[in-house]
Length: 115
Image (tube, rainbow, N blue to C red):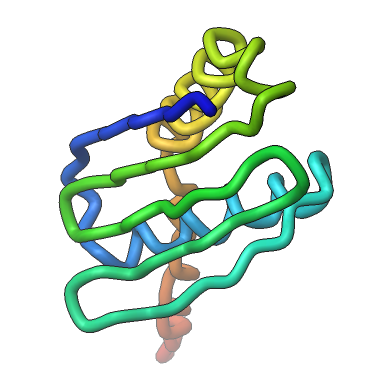
């Protein structure tokens, strides 16, 4: 078996980091048929994932992502490629800038014309 350990620091805070973790969870489930469970915590969330040949956890805090995964015998042969793909994916998600929604400008009061 091969192990993968990835740690990424961030300055997002827990709520924004949680959103990124949810997005990554959705990608794993839809693209790789991975079963994920997500447990929210006070200071640390835990996302567990598994499918034949791989299992692991992603710990999400206000300032860090910490991923630990175990690859089975067959997938262990591709550890380097799998780890590089995970790193690239997480880094891309961390680089995405949230779209700021502008609040509509308040209506200006109509000018009254007096004669």
